[in-house]
Image (cartoon, rainbow, N blue to C red; front, side, top):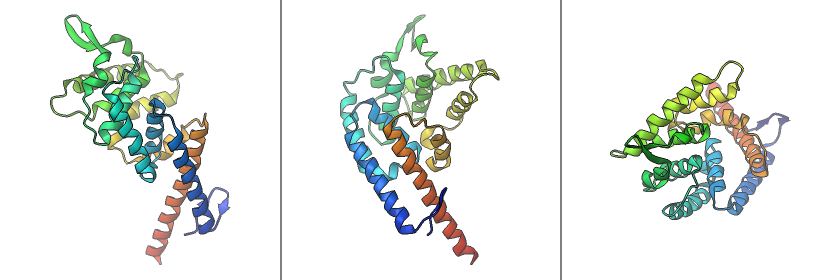
Length: 231
């Protein structure tokens, strides 16, 4: 394999050394991240970039700790934090109760217990709630309600956006409604996610660098496979 990078061709040995070093930098960064909601955002980012398989043990350690803490967690009316934690834990196979995560976001309204109206303007929280609702099991009415509530208000938000509004916001909302995260093959969406990653902090920059190396590695491997076939 001769890895093709944007700045030319480098030797396989040099490329793999750089890839290994960057992976270790990310592993070290994961070990030092605070075990709060920031660690969950980090896990979500790593998984969306298709890099989760490189750090299975490290991510599992964080999620196990979050699972132990989730039984007494209070999410301070932050729907995004609650939904993200629930989704990541359930995707990992942890037996978590949706009522423990979303109960505080419901209230009595006209004699019915419903999701609070104050959540309607929280687009980020609604998108993560919608993602979480796709992991419902039989008899979990709260997640069925979450699916209806989130999809209704996300579609309303989408309809309210006009041609002068942020096109990227429209794409993100449409993508959330059409393709739930846990059913996707990360590699097919990873490049789009990478392009929209701001790189506002050190760990995002580090993940961007590793993701670009990963894409080059995969691309080069596929090229070599194709060459072997056509020879």
